[in-house]
Amino acid sequence: MFEDLDKFRHEHKYVEPEINLKGMESRISCLMKKDHHVGEKGFYSIRSLYFDDYRDRYLNENIDGTDERSKWRIRIYDRSDSFISLERKIRKSDLISKQSCAIDKDTYSRIMARTAVISSDNAPLLNLFLTEIKTHALHPAIIVEYDRTPFVAAEGNTRVTFDRNIRSSSEIDLFLCDRELSSRPVLSKGQNLLEVKYDAFLPDQIAHAIEHGRMRRETFSKYILARRFPHNGVVAMHF
Image 1 (cartoon, rainbow, N blue to C red):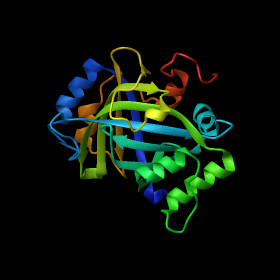
Image 2 (image 1 turned 180 degrees about the vertical axis):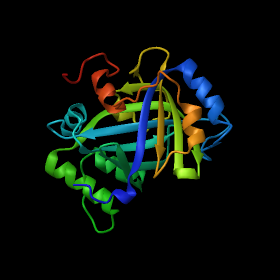
Image 3 (image 1 turned 60 degrees about the horizontal axis):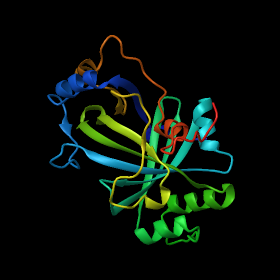
Image 4 (image 1 turned 90 degrees about the vertical axis):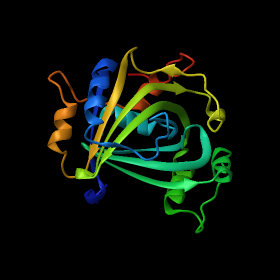
């Protein structure tokens, strides 16, 4: 299904107590630089609107651990609509790839109103997304929002991110609004997420700075937890 593995990267996820993450972040900051997109705060917020089809195919493939699967989302940063990204994330076993293209506010509005049309003027990824909307009734499912502290290194094209305050919201109509949404945490209090992404290898010094004896890799999906714990407390899925 997804054959071009040259474009895929390794991705490891760990859910850890914040006290452990603080220690890791201190060590990592001596080895890696922060992503240039962070401002004075040292982190940025991510708000993603996830889509699914009429059968919840993407959700069920995640739950079932389907070896080759994908998901669609629209993403903004720091609650700003100045840059809106349409993204398709693809997973094959432990490898991931992300395809993306920028869309403007008018295109976003037409997507949400279901009036956007396939066109040769569109980016190919947008046309593929619109095809999914028409053929599989793809629709907005849930919003996921969190604060990310990202570190990068040229060796191995390595990226280490600390994702905190992960929460879900069903206020889909307010996705582009520059304000806090009504939301609900998706992890237990004091627990946050570490993600490690790299190409062919993870540099030893970074691996040693991150790992401790009790760490356990997780098959973690923000989307699954957001669907399980929506902000209004209504369980949106069954396990």
